[in-house]
Length: 476
Ligand SMILES: Cc1cc2nc3c(=O)[nH]c(=O)nc-3n(C[C@H](O)[C@H](O)[C@H](O)COP(=O)(O)OP(=O)(O)OC[C@H]3O[C@@H](n4cnc5c(N)ncnc54)[C@H](O)[C@@H]3O)c2cc1C
Image (cartoon, rainbow, N blue to C red; front, top):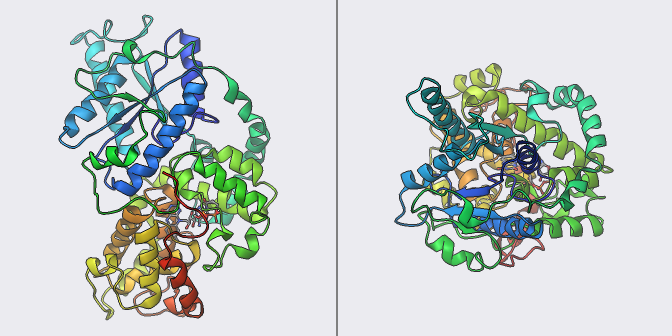
C-alpha cells in the first residue's frame, strides 16, 4: 500500500484479497517508507503517516492489518530495500499500485526485475524456491500493478494524448461505462478481511527488519517518528492540511457549503483558496477514493472535467511517456524548437537558491513561492504563472524545467504526482499549441506575465502570510 492509502474502494486491495481467496493463500498488507524517496521531508512524511494511521485503523475495523516499515535514522537503506524484496520473494503474488512516475515506478520495476531474475535461476535449477514461498505448489513470485487512481485505467486509454480535447473525446465512452460500474463500488467496503489476514507473528519478515502495525495507537506521535527518520527536516508539516480521513472532511464541507456547485465561478480566483477542493494531496496518496469523488462531483461539469479529463490525461501521459515525461523531450517538437531558438536571448540569470528563498524581486512570484514554502499549496491559476516565469531566470529551458520540478516536488504537498509533470510541462508548451506573436525567451510558448496578478497582489499576500492557508487547520 504505497499510493492508494485507504482501506476502501481500493482496486489493488480488492485484487489482492480476491487472489488470496481464490488461491487459498493469506494476505499481508504492507507499506514501506523509504528515505530513498527523492523528496522525503517532514511535510511529506507527516502527511503520509497520518494517512497510513487512518488506513491502518480502517483495515483493523475490517479484520485486517496494515504493516508498516519506516526507515529510521541510522538504518541502512540497503537493509530497508532488502526487507521489501524478501517480502516480495517470499510471496506467491505481490500486488501494488500502478503509479506511473518516480519513485514508485522505479521501485516497482526494480522489484519485478529482481523477481524475474530469481525465477529464471529457479527455472534453470540454480536455486530452489519451493520452501521459500507461502505457496500451494505454484512457482508464483509474480507482481501485479493495479490502477487505483483513474476511472479510465491508463492501460485502457492505450496511448499518450497531446491535447485534452482529443483525450476527452477518445475516452468518453470508457468513462461513461466506468462511471456506471462505479456507482456501487462502495459495496465492497463492508467485506471482512479477517479470514485471509495473517497476524504479525505469522509473517516471515526478514531478520532485523523493523515493522509496526499501523494504527492510531502505534502512530500517536507522528512528529517524533518523523524526527527519527533520515529525511530533509527543513520543510515543516503543512499548517493547514492533515493527511488521511481529513480529506473526506474537507470534501464534505466543499459540497455542503455550496462551493462545489459554484466551482466554475470561483475556481480561478486566487483570493478564494477554498473556491477549489484542495484535495490534490489526498489524491496523490490515494487517501480519498477517486471513484467516490467522481460519483459525488458528477453533477458539476467543470469539476468533473478537471478531475476526470485533465487529471487522467496526466496519468496516461506519464504512463506512456515515461521517462521523457520529466524532461524537455516530453514536450512537442514545436515547443522544444522554439524554446531552443530563444535559449540565447538575454535574461536576468538568478541562482536557484534565490528562487527557493522567494527573493527574486518579482513581488507576485515571490508571494507564490512563499505560499508553497509555508503552506505546501499553490492555487492553480498562479501556479501556471509561477512555473512559466522560471524560464526568465534559469540558464537554459532545460534547467528551468528541472528547477520547476524541484521546487514543486520539494514544497508542494501534492508534488511528485503525474499531475505535477503534466502541469509543469503545460507551462513549457505541452497540451497547448504555438502562440503569436513570438516573444523573447518564450518564443511561441504561451506567455503569462506575473503582472496579470498585480490587481490582487495585496489580498493574495495577506492570504499567504496568515498562519494557515484558507479555512482548513491541521489537526495532528
Ligand atoms: C506548474 C504546475 C504544477 C502543478 N503541480 C501539480 C502537482 O504537483 N500535483 C497535482 O496534483 N497537480 C498539480 N498541478 C495541477 C493543479 O494545479 C492542481 O491539481 C490543483 O491546483 C489542485 O488543487 P485542487 O485539489 O483544489 O483542485 P480542484 O480545482 O478542486 O480540482 C479537483 C481535482 O482535479 C484535479 N485537477 C485540477 N486541476 C488540474 C489540472 N490542471 N491538471 C491535472 N489535474 C487537475 C486534481 O486532482 C484536483 O484535486 C500543477 C499545475 C501547474 C500549472
